[in-house]
Image (cartoon, rainbow, N blue to C red):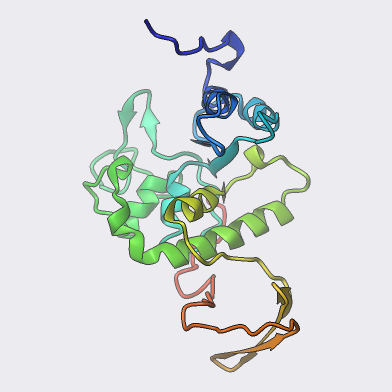
Length: 249
């Protein structure tokens, strides 16, 4: 006999369904942390999903890993910083894919409207590759780049949002926060608008001298810190590949 709870009618549609199902794991104590992963592309009820995730369950909230316009935004950020508001993941006529980026369909947008076509036109994935089946191994070496680009993109999107809610922003992603958890990384990225910052009792001062970044660290605590070579990673986002910067019409 199946003891799985029946999904209430108001939560059947995506992505509220994902949030509701994640809440069940928190409710019965199976998990102390739960995530719902979804994107903007073609899904309704985004506002409802975010509102539902804001309801505490046993003192915990369902975390959301959201991408706009689609999950492929996160994949693209492994290769470049991009602020283009793509219209969709893939161009289609009903269920027929235009196979954008492959030059085989008369309505191929050549990466102007869909992010999958852009990935193929730029050579980031093979023209015959199904973007839904891209393995992590092919992106692993670019993790630092993706995390830094996602942080910069999110900061820029929210700063320019005009008060719009997250699900209305494009482009946007916070999948990097889930990846950080899954990989159990020992370092984290922090967005700093100024050259000076204080983190865990350490003051950091960054200045640029030509093509050299100089980092000065002062310890204001009584305890001694040992900085290993991999303790601090400086990532310069918006580098030579950041040529995807304007919305395309």
